[in-house]
Length: 576
Ligand code: GLU
Image 1 (cartoon, helix red, strand yellow):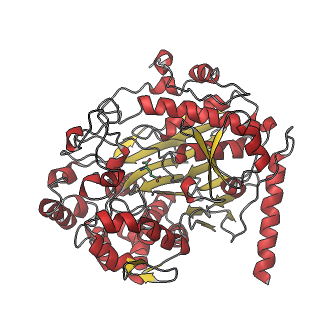
Image 2 (cartoon, helix red, strand yellow):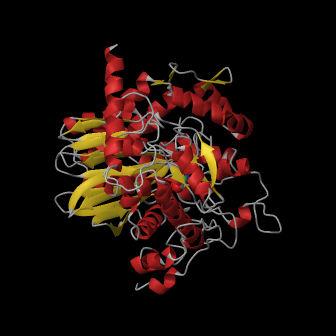
């Protein structure tokens, strides 16, 4: 009963915040229905961790309360996520971290994206006469050849060496304890296991092992079941003692290389693992209505496309159009399509191609792109622009802010849920299927080449206002990452929403395809108004996992840290 009244109070609060967010606007869109569910956000003063699983958020909080900084907490959360959300990220994957160091007033990006092994070339794929892959989509996402060299541990090592204050093994302790205790299966995870069963049972060389751990009697583990991956616990213990080298040069490297030599045609070799390096990169930076947006550069397209979308949107009075209005959705969707057309043509690993980065993020270029937006009609013929003229020169995301104002936002992944479904014998580690993020097309700048990083969409982002931290934002969701982060920034800045209502707000996404993906909560009158302008829709569930799971922290006007977490995953924000 008590819980019920708290729930009702929360719903009223969220509802009224959403209404407030829309106040002062001309066109009042019908308020979308917000989900009825448990409280996931937090208001705190010292530190906040927001992650896609409650135990991972708590692992980070434990470290903050022991005196660790935001980076220490992020490392602990990252390891814990690999244990309690093994479908989305882990030791076999990679990612990007955006870090803001308060006393330096400076941001850094650690790129620990997976990298194509030396054996990976376009000729490794069977192509038809048009240069398109012959294998069905499954062949490219499941099994040995879908795996790129993991970057996860080199990334954590770099974060720890540059910014950490606690001991490496202490940061791994919560994950090891959670792995020993076993993972209690959530409704969400059980559903994901069911969704992936078809491809895994058909194409995964590690199916016998996956079946033993995750699929009891060939059926997905049920909510409430406890899963123990003892081999992963052992791998974590070895890494806690011997550091990342155990994975890249030591005992775990040997197990991976053995599996590949015996069964995986040597796709990943000892040399590939030894050569892998995380890279410290300068963030890309833009300005949106006076806020500084610092985010991830290539080999992720996420940051650059995000800034291009925001630059295009900046030319319109979105606040006046109103949150959830057809006008705002029209403009934002068209901006998304314009940025995605450029993404497809220009974005790839910067080590392998020259990207017109400055042009893509230029305000004058955005002005030119804006001319292709007709306020009355959807543009169905959008192509990449000429940014060169403006040149002067199944993932998870989490955020941590500490009491010094240091901020970390990380997006890490093994790509599809359950990755390649390859787990080298004896490691307990599920490897990524990141080769799938290459474009198997000789004409693409993102075609696979040995040692190249596949193009990502990940965009963990830090936003400052007048040089002072304002928010950290991140989400999984492949190309939806770019549109979700830009929508969240518009919700926070233009519509003055609080973070949690912004996370709950119905999502929409168009990567320059015929139909815009929308959550079904978008009211019918808005959908009809947009259809009259030529938009088509692919209607998803009311709160759809397709759109990712955003986690973030906002330094709100009340001077407090507002942690927000996403019910599209098992998200929770905790703080103290
Ligand atoms: N592999 C994708 C990327 O790097 C992320 C996958 C996802 O978020 O689901 O962009």
